[in-house]
Length: 73
Image 1 (tube, helix red, strand yellow):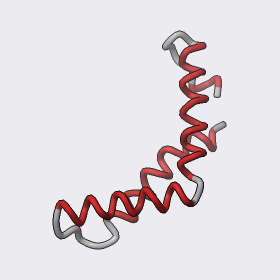
Image 2: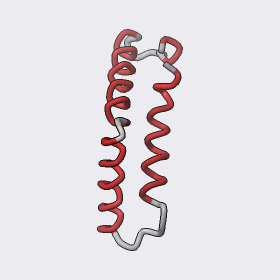
Image 3: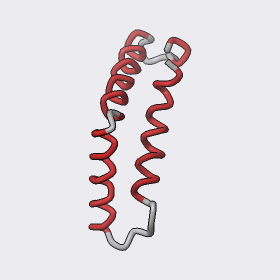
Image 4: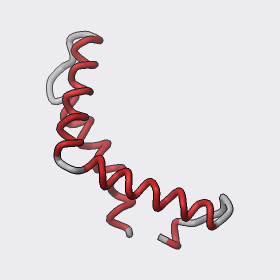
């Protein structure tokens, strides 16, 4: 499950890399880049894996009653 915990970081880095590849010229430019990068990530299947990982983590947190649960993944 360690691979799944890295999905959040990987997606974040991927999003950042795509959005800030060149200098952002305006708020609208930034908005368009974020949406475009989000679409690319979704189309590549990253979004589904992130969603599955999130659900697994939520369930582990519930089982641990809000305590430490990373070691259980």
